[in-house]
Amino acid sequence: MWKYTVEVNGMMCGMCEAHVNDAVRKACPVKKVNSSRSKNQTVILSETELDTEALMNAIRSTGYEVGTIQKEPYKKRGLFG
Image (cartoon, rainbow, N blue to C red; front, side, top):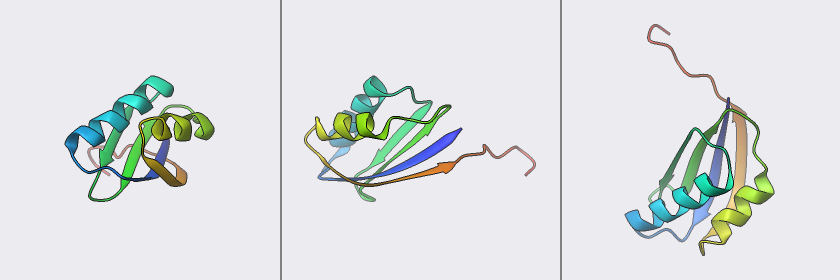
Protein backbone atom coordinates (compact mmCIF):
# COMPACT_ATOMS: atom_id res chain seq x y z
CA MET A 1 0.00 0.00 0.00
CA TRP A 2 1.23 3.49 -0.86
CA LYS A 3 0.50 6.92 0.57
CA TYR A 4 0.81 9.97 -1.65
CA THR A 5 0.70 13.49 -0.25
CA VAL A 6 0.15 16.05 -2.99
CA GLU A 7 0.51 19.80 -2.50
CA VAL A 8 -2.56 21.42 -4.09
CA ASN A 9 -2.96 25.19 -4.16
CA GLY A 10 -6.11 27.13 -4.92
CA MET A 11 -8.79 25.14 -3.07
CA MET A 12 -11.10 27.61 -1.32
CA CYS A 13 -14.07 25.55 -0.08
CA GLY A 14 -15.50 22.08 0.47
CA MET A 15 -16.70 21.89 -3.14
CA CYS A 16 -13.13 22.53 -4.29
CA GLU A 17 -11.96 19.60 -2.16
CA ALA A 18 -14.70 17.37 -3.58
CA HIS A 19 -13.82 18.42 -7.14
CA VAL A 20 -10.17 17.43 -6.64
CA ASN A 21 -11.17 14.13 -4.95
CA ASP A 22 -13.47 13.20 -7.84
CA ALA A 23 -10.80 14.00 -10.43
CA VAL A 24 -8.25 11.82 -8.61
CA ARG A 25 -10.73 8.91 -8.31
CA LYS A 26 -11.48 9.06 -12.04
CA ALA A 27 -7.81 9.20 -13.07
CA CYS A 28 -6.20 6.69 -10.69
CA PRO A 29 -7.07 3.41 -8.92
CA VAL A 30 -7.18 4.68 -5.34
CA LYS A 31 -8.47 3.15 -2.11
CA LYS A 32 -8.99 6.49 -0.37
CA VAL A 33 -8.55 10.17 -1.20
CA ASN A 34 -8.97 13.19 1.07
CA SER A 35 -8.30 16.83 0.21
CA SER A 36 -7.82 19.65 2.72
CA ARG A 37 -8.01 23.28 1.65
CA SER A 38 -6.59 24.41 5.01
CA LYS A 39 -3.50 22.20 4.58
CA ASN A 40 -3.28 22.77 0.80
CA GLN A 41 -2.94 19.06 0.23
CA THR A 42 -4.56 15.88 -1.02
CA VAL A 43 -3.69 12.57 0.63
CA ILE A 44 -4.19 9.41 -1.41
CA LEU A 45 -3.96 5.75 -0.40
CA SER A 46 -3.47 3.20 -3.15
CA GLU A 47 -2.79 -0.53 -3.37
CA THR A 48 -0.39 0.06 -6.28
CA GLU A 49 2.06 2.75 -7.27
CA LEU A 50 0.38 5.56 -9.19
CA ASP A 51 1.33 7.31 -12.39
CA THR A 52 2.26 10.67 -10.86
CA GLU A 53 2.06 12.42 -14.24
CA ALA A 54 -1.56 11.27 -14.67
CA LEU A 55 -2.27 12.29 -11.09
CA MET A 56 -0.84 15.78 -11.60
CA ASN A 57 -2.70 16.22 -14.90
CA ALA A 58 -6.00 15.16 -13.31
CA ILE A 59 -5.66 17.74 -10.54
CA ARG A 60 -4.44 20.46 -12.91
CA SER A 61 -7.44 19.81 -15.17
CA THR A 62 -9.67 20.95 -12.30
CA GLY A 63 -7.93 24.33 -12.30
CA TYR A 64 -5.72 23.93 -9.23
CA GLU A 65 -1.94 24.15 -8.98
CA VAL A 66 0.04 21.05 -8.11
CA GLY A 67 3.24 21.36 -6.10
CA THR A 68 5.32 18.57 -4.63
CA ILE A 69 4.25 14.94 -4.44
CA GLN A 70 5.58 12.78 -1.61
CA LYS A 71 5.28 9.00 -1.86
CA GLU A 72 5.84 6.61 1.03
CA PRO A 73 4.94 3.03 1.95
CA TYR A 74 1.78 2.89 4.04
CA LYS A 75 1.00 0.28 6.66
CA LYS A 76 -2.42 0.24 8.18
CA ARG A 77 -2.17 0.25 11.94
CA GLY A 78 -3.84 -2.65 13.64
CA LEU A 79 -6.10 -2.49 16.65
CA PHE A 80 -3.26 -3.42 19.01
CA GLY A 81 -0.30 -1.70 17.53
